[in-house]
Length: 194
Image 1 (cartoon, rainbow, N blue to C red):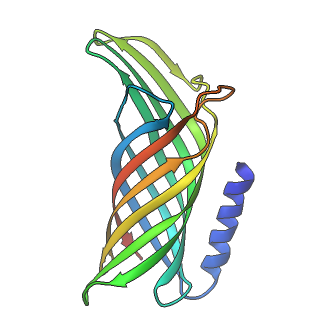
Image 2: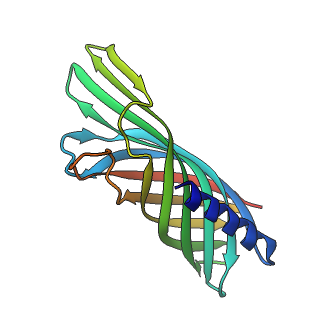
């Protein structure tokens, strides 16, 4: 995984060294849960922030690699009992964007591509009647590597970017487990083009 993130960083620097690139920064909040075999899970408040570059490939198509810190996880429980898993990833989406001009000042960008992520921290907590019974950090047996599909829509107004994104993981969340449980997250983002 470290090799993949290193490759993404080198790719970003190589593309950045060429002409016609723009830098951007964004942040967002959203909801995460899991898909697959997971049952009875609830959505969980999460967020993300990152920086990236955009390299035009044609008049409408661009390559947009980024480096982000993304918070994902899941929640389960009933009235008096609750479990919550928080995972913080360093992730690198490499998306292609197809841009449509809506008006003289507004653009629409449709984005899709893979993402690669490495868990830098995880936290598991269990509560009963509002009292924390168990609290672990780094021992949640989460697979450190995640990869999946990142899709989104951005509305661009001058240098401002407002968007919605979905990330669907394809690597099982748990290590050494036959369970087919994967990350799923949705974000509303706001960004700025430099």
